[in-house]
Amino acid sequence: MKNETMSLNEKLAIIQTEFKAKKSRFNSFGKYNFRSAEDILEATKPFLQRLNVSVVVTEELIQSNFLEFPMLKSTATISDNLTSIEATAIVGVDLDQKGMQMPQKFGSASSYGKKYALGNLFLIDDTQDPDHGKADPKPKVKIEVGTETFDKAKAYVKDQTTLDTILNKYDVDPKAIEELKKLI
Image (cartoon, rainbow, N blue to C red):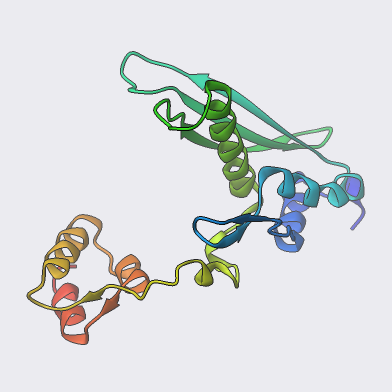
């Protein structure tokens, strides 16, 4: 199918399925690799001319008397000559972040928002990456019936009506799983 006859949805689907962005940054505190908004934008460049699309990221400052801190709304938009598709991410600006000047606080939130808006648009899921599991060297917390962690898990399941998150994140005793399933 020629690019001129493809819909924007079809072009976006190609990017979403073929997209590869290296994790070129390293977090020395958490000891894991990650990709930045710049890495994502760089990885989209080969698709732009090939599919005749453009990608733009815009930001909007959200302030309100009801918010404790300013928020940034980042919007990633892919468009062709006929239509556009967008995805957003909203992040807070931590004004109390120690060791940063005000421009750095906003810049950090901006980078984070752009990264997640682009991730939402291109369906980038860091939890699926092979090195994601290596970031957390700590063993999983064990959940057993009669423990405080079991009580917290019960409250979560009652509220969320799912066990998936708990089973993926914790080491759950089979007896505890049976008890938690009764709550769903």
